[in-house]
Image 1 (cartoon, rainbow, N blue to C red):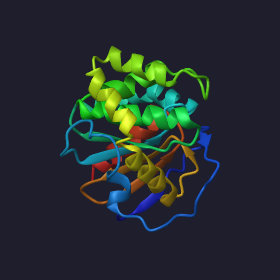
Image 2 (cartoon, rainbow, N blue to C red; image 1 turned 120 degrees about the vertical axis):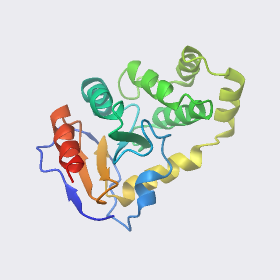
Image 3 (cartoon, rainbow, N blue to C red; image 1 turned 180 degrees about the vertical axis):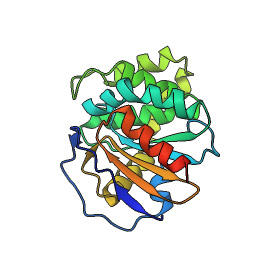
Image 4 (cartoon, rainbow, N blue to C red; image 1 turned 30 degrees about the vertical axis):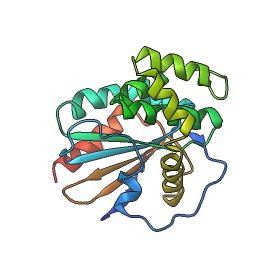
Length: 211
């Protein structure tokens, strides 16, 4: 994957995984596969990968404090695209929320559902991501409810979520959110740990865009 470097920024807290794993063999698929649909220009020269958990406090902080500015300045301008990958480390509601988002993706509304989850975030294991509420969120984004319900009952995306978790463990990720910025031009991979401020992402994006 080319140069693999870690951000030297001071860490902002992140949700810690209970089962950190030693790094294993890494390939492009480890980053790019078993995640969300691409948000933004598929041919953008930079891809931002986020490993997150919908119940994670600091993932929610990133969503509200940083992500919108990244979308406005880099994604909507075609310079960066985004892939969200599941690392469901907090509880069963995290897995259920992740699965519901993938089922929404079947109907072309992954990112709307993703945003709705974080817009309704209510803590860790507090019940806000209960199955009952996941149905309400699906209604809010106007999904076909029969198709959505069948998708969840069948567990169609359980394997994708499990594989994404394995990818996070292969990368040695110890908590969420964890980010990887990948340059399509140079193959450089830059890791960012935790809910860093917008300026950290901006600096890395601009540095890669210059190369």
